[in-house]
Length: 269
Ligand SMILES: C[S@@+](CC[C@H](N)C(=O)[O-])C[C@H]1O[C@@H](n2cnc3c(N)ncnc32)[C@H](O)[C@@H]1O
Image (cartoon, rainbow, N blue to C red; front, side):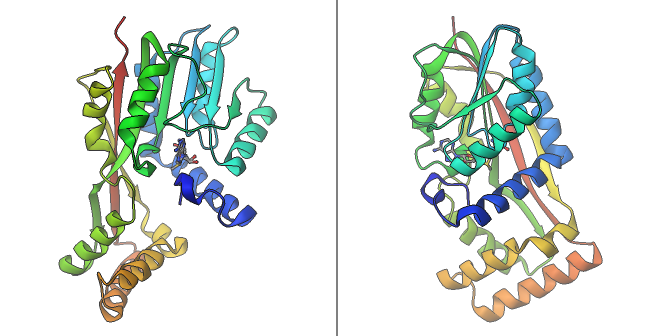
């Protein structure tokens, strides 16, 4: 839903859906924990220049903007105009110095070495060429600069209940529709290949979806339909899987999780 190629789809209703999704995700305790871990590792100082790539609603950038005040600069790069507008609106409403501009992770609008602190959360999974983005993050970092790249790895999905063979085929069909489903496991090497020193400590947090959330979102049904369309499941198999998952969601016994990881890269210097 967040890939650059699909930004123009769906108009205002689509933007409202993305905003609601991001708001819900950042309420998750696991997301908050991993963000707090990354913030501590980044250790922003007053006067520094900070950038959030794929800033979404700008919540973390506003936090960073406070930490670098009064002379620092906080810029969010966000290619989706609807999200950019919402992030700008919230920053203005809350009196934040954070600003938001258009741009792409693989072509950042900053000079070499211009950024002290950089973050990029749940963006790499949407990139067809994540290594190009890693090089770009390293290019704009100043010597001694720090980058936190946070992302999910969809190979860690736990989806319960359901016939294991159907769950596997459903899950693998999802992976095939994502540009970079195993984003997190590649991050340390991608940052190293871009010339950054990677911290030994890799942060992690499992996002466990509340069972009731599976009922309302429609995501499971949409993914099942796509798996049928692709031929990964028959309609009968998809309906059987959906019936099991939805019954468990109603009973409060369903379990769905995906793990997010955080990698810190430092520019030598
Ligand atoms: C799942 S959202 C995460 C937003 C925010 N980082 C957060 O954690 O709440 C993915 C974000 O990546 C952005 N994005 C997608 N492709 C991008 C690209 N090529 N360069 C920069 N950002 C991109 C989307 O517009 C969206 O804001």
